[in-house]
Length: 137
Image (tube, rainbow, N blue to C red; front, side):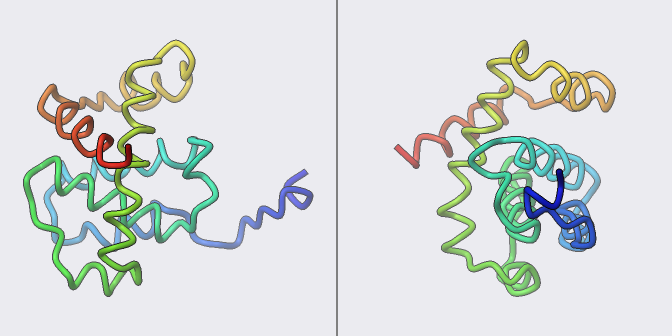
């Protein structure tokens, strides 16, 4: 089945890139980036992207939500341009908001992120995500 889907288990996953990109951030940015990366891996519009791109956008959004800068150095490290990250961020924000709003449709993912990991998107985070998601419309 995996061969038919052209899915290769040898390639790195987004979490490996997230670990590298969040080395200089605190745990809250890392935790948010992991959750965003997980959500992106399950969303139809973002799951087909390279793991490095998913990681770069996830860390960018997590840093933005926490009010921390995403320095140019990290764009070079991730090999994803600032323009590309900013272009994709609204798509990711929409995916996150969709999951939060439709928890019943995403039961297993919701349970894993929000119940087992005790992940919390605050009201401030949700407002920032809504603002970011509106940039794509």
